Image 1 (cartoon, rainbow, N blue to C red):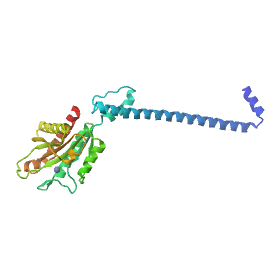
Image 2 (cartoon, protein in one colour):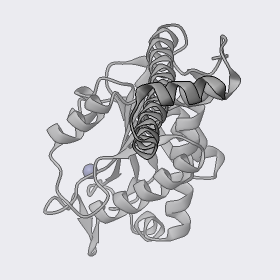
Image 3 (cartoon, rainbow, N blue to C red):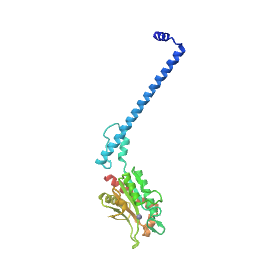
Image 4 (tube, rainbow, N blue to C red):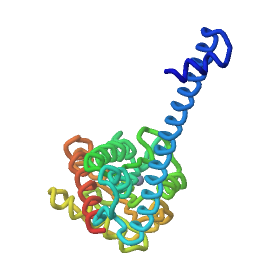
Length: 268
Ligand SMILES: [Zn+2]
């Protein structure tokens, strides 16, 4: 106290003015402290973001090579609280569902029933079921629009999907008694397995199935991931056509597709 008084007296300035100046200096010092504190918080936040970014990218890469489906991934360290976002990113399983035809491309048509409407309905139901199981589903169309075959392949290839399933209805006018669910793949054991899993799931749900065959359809040829084209039933067969229009049967077919995809995911 004594020193302060001496100092003030020595400076010789009127007391209120000195006090004001001192107040301003204190305010500036305080503001600087706050600024430094904010900068420190910002640096820490940036550091955390950086660490998370590196973890996510490095782990996704090494995981992708060793364990394609991330099923066996275990956190290799770090705080448990920070490991969750990275783990979720690794486990994202992306499936592209392709509702055949759309817009001006009606597909086959019998008795006013259009293939594009049945394929869209079943695709939307299958997407709902897979999303409920935590699968990331990308649709090539989700309304009555015409999407080119090139574009359907591009969508699947660009997102780097794990699986691709195209959904169509069949027709065989030479013999309208022919019916059943069948699958196609192109040059690849994984595509074949996917089609087989879906048919097996359909079978288990009491659906009449036929066979799995190799075919040169563009959407299963030009897609770079395991791909299957499923002909879910014959619109040329009156009984199957009637079934395919019911929500019950559409739900069963959608369940078979979802089950087959999940079986494929589990098998790796
Ligand atoms: Zn078709």
